[in-house]
Length: 113
Length: 116
Image (cartoon, rainbow over all chains, first blue to last red; front, side):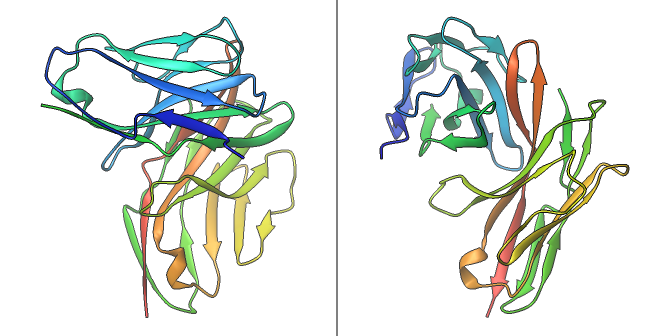
């Protein structure tokens, strides 16, 4: 049971570099999400995708782009990384119409220096 | 977005005792879901308990129960017979449903320390 798989688990970037965080789920869920977690701030929603082909902004979308490549995959891209984007990033998936539970990946710890 | 407030950044409880974590939320919806998630040091997000707003009965899962007060928009988590393994961050979350789909909104979390 793979569930939600995020890659990479750790990453260090220099300011201005770009990178893409990958997320894949094998539960046939319609909805996928990207969150960032900072100390004392809880999990804040960056972007989400209610279904294949759709994406919407969450609470903190600035500096990020997303792609819902297909039903399984939802990637998060940082075009020009900034130190303020140092955080732990979580991907999640769900199908709340069928089961009121979101499943989370293990997280990616990103440091921008 | 709906606001979820956890007013206790840290709580401490002795093993075998009971502790209550507070959560309030702001919404204009009448039907919604509320959740408590646990995050141990491993960073894994684990669902503890969920509550449907249309159900008056408080949800219970073994040692975990909630006190859901819909009119007061309050959703507290009670942990009975606390165990060392309960030490973790606890997040309250609200499930919103808009034209864009479902989204889970989290509070800032409460760090629970369990002492022997």
